[in-house]
Length: 622
Image (cartoon, rainbow, N blue to C red; front, top):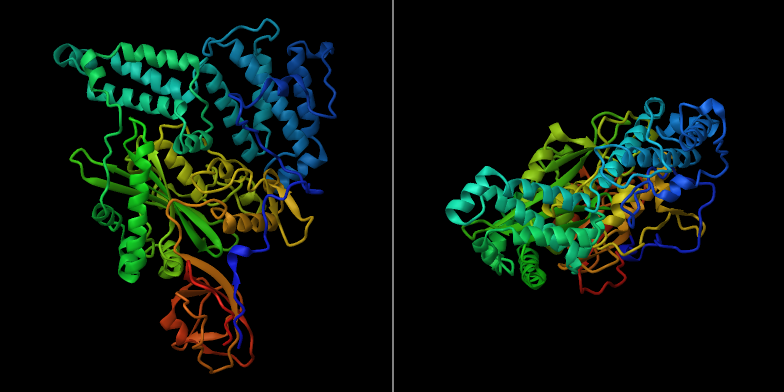
């Protein structure tokens, strides 16, 4: 019997391989939401029609249409009718890359014509662009309705989002929404009464002003937290127009209230006993404390230190902290992300809330997993087999790693989680918008989500940021960089196998067949969060090994210092107390020592085991 340990952190799967371009793989890139642009459909997309298409702007047959609309519309129809696009429609519920390029061009024309000539969208009129005619509007709607459903919904949302952004004029959507709300509340009869009688703001107006101030701080100040937030939600820095509007609003506040406005956060230092008391309100964390008291105590000490250290970077509008967790190998080898918020109630008591999306297998074959959101980590009563994946991860690896970020509205985690929690609000689980169709299942009305999508959505509520339905791959993953300790550009390229030339770009993944999408997702799932340090580090290191046992022989000589083990799916010729040993289940060392070889033949079984972080691994011969 031999155990050949290999550190899982030195996997041959490598990421970010520059200079290697994929061959024969292309993706419908959907609508490219540009990080450095306030518009989805840029002017260059309007001026430059897709490659290989002829734009006829002179035909007299196009009289109900303007030349720019007619050319873009004809080009889009031409490629949508192609054999290539039909293949994408039938197999991925999407359109071909060439058709998507043509639709982007047409959508850009539509956005420009609707924005510059609708009374609902203030802005400078363009003499070169004619308004959208009724005939053009009808043609556009008919074309939209003819598109594959998944792509149609995505394109329609992108157009609506672009129009909304343009409608705000010199203000970003997040600032404009909060500013209008603050102005409305300040001018309300209720607020006028408070101001006349008390020289103060009404509670509703005060909350609206605080929300706007938090957004101004996120957009204006520079820190790890604000940088992470701006990246996660594509927020632009505060513009001169926004700064001027905020300054004018401040001047209009009652003098007494302006004096009251705090210059520093009112969130005070947390004590270890407070953190332990709050975090153990979650039953999974309480069980962890009972099963691994030493590791749990170290985790709480590190978390308390991280929270207090981050207090020096808090803005005056921050009310607490957002905390992201990484649970290694939660689903097979895939790591899981979850979220917590921590704040003080009005009486000064420390409070903590959680948000966690569970990926639940379907009872029916060839059906996608379901993403169910919970306000805690112990899902053992609902999860098949009675084992909560997060708890199995902690039994193997100990407490999770964690990142801590100052946050203006941490208590929002409770309501935001409540609104999407439970099976009644569950969505299909998938990292791309082509995943469900590619596996042969029927997409639901709402787009699928993963734990990253849910974490991103609830973080948006905690930071007063806008959140849109977007796929994890390729969109949400890079946005979550700092929150998830993902290095910039880490997953721009994904290695699909050990072959040097088997590399794809991140944006290509949705165009792959189902099996290859799964492979790419699993490779990313194992590696995310390992490129950059965490504020609270994992206390263990994982290794992979193989074990071979003679039938009837008990295994007692496991690698020295092993904390727990978990077998990798495959043949496992072992029993424990007469029952087969299962893959994906975490076994204690007492259980491992009682395992016995089974079957008529000798076969190796692969397993993962953990050692304390600073332990030395030697070659173990069993």
